[in-house]
Length: 293
Image 1 (cartoon, rainbow, N blue to C red):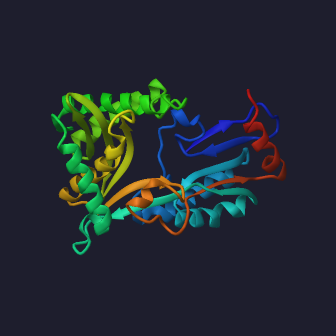
Image 2 (cartoon, rainbow, N blue to C red):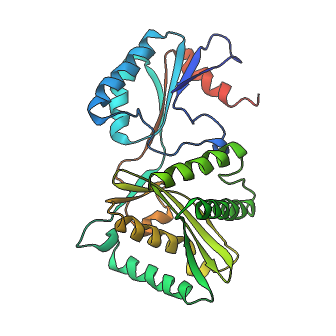
Image 3 (cartoon, rainbow, N blue to C red):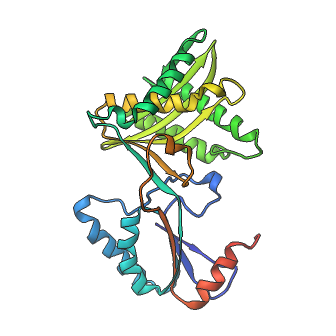
């Protein structure tokens, strides 16, 4: 975690939050399910140490836990609500996680969804000079990464939004991460090409028994009726299964997310909670965050 100063409003102390949060969305490098990272057997002890540190540091007036899994939000609340009596909590979307190792339900998909996706894939594969370019070494990984950045940025720029790769810092972070994941065989990154031009790119990060879908890019000017983005999900799910993984995690989405086409969301929502040590901090710090300076 990191501590920041709220110097614009005297007397409101400092704020603590997960590293990677608190910046404008376009430059945040973190994803969902943020937590204290440790060996499972040490989780309670590490969380207790965090509680103790907050209790001891009286200058900390607020603490934000962003996009936390619901059961962990409950664990954190047991400790922090004793130290910081005022809080603000909101839902931050739902987790969409597909179990892909069930032999009775291939790839975890319903027969209807599986048939629809395979039909779309066959139509794309029938187009002239179709190919899938997988990341198998540094050269192909960097080619696919550039394709991902370009397609993703073009897609969002057309609707007046910057997209995830708007800052050089964010782009450099993931370029380095792609090579790190490749070296540990934890990268799923590929692109779809038609007639020598890219139409989609897909980026997943693998850890333990799960492939986490992180980002994608799609050429929405062409082939949108064939849903190349959804076809990419099918290819990534098949690759995850080939690697012996148990889950394909679509990450967070709203109640009406397109991810509902693949799997149902968790019943409980992700949680973002901010705790405040004083009544003044509870009411003044949120105002300060909205000030344009």
